[in-house]
Length: 202
Picture 1 (tube, helix red, strand yellow):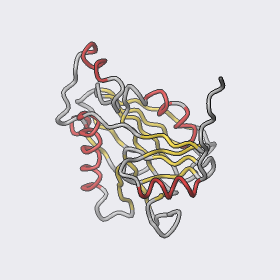
Picture 2: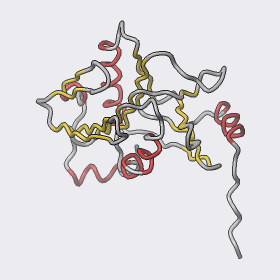
Picture 3: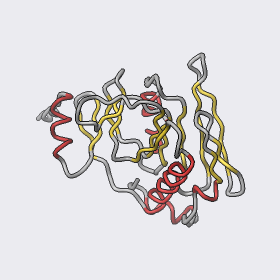
Picture 4: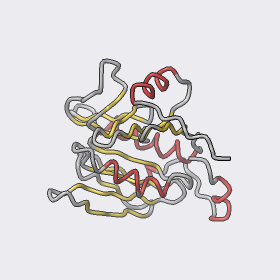
């Protein structure tokens, strides 16, 4: 007996469902993918980034948005919810609902066991199709490590890793510098055998 084919949604159907839903789903190639909850360290790292952005971006033409803001990769049709977005200049929005951003400048994803492979691979390849995107940052939640990819003129991406709590993470595309100790403030790093027990959560 053959399996029933999955229902394919149009972009308009996805947006209608998503805008009325109580939980968030990503969308790609006609399929909707429900998003899971996040751990305390994941949320703490995200909140620490956003708190620093609020202070350091004040008075500039850049602003930060957290994971309630939907982003569309216009070239591929992916709709997703990055953990943190920085957008500089005028916002480009999909329509009058003002809930789909088209022109992020910086995207930050906080890595989780269930999403790390996707964030490093297929999702990053999708993000590279966003012409406005200048910088992509991956922040670990189980160790003090932040990795930075910066777009170059030839459409290559340069890579830098910042490791440890006694150094500073400096963004290349915006005037923000954050001590790693501030990014990981309030996070307790578990030994490897304990960290494995939370696999499946963001």
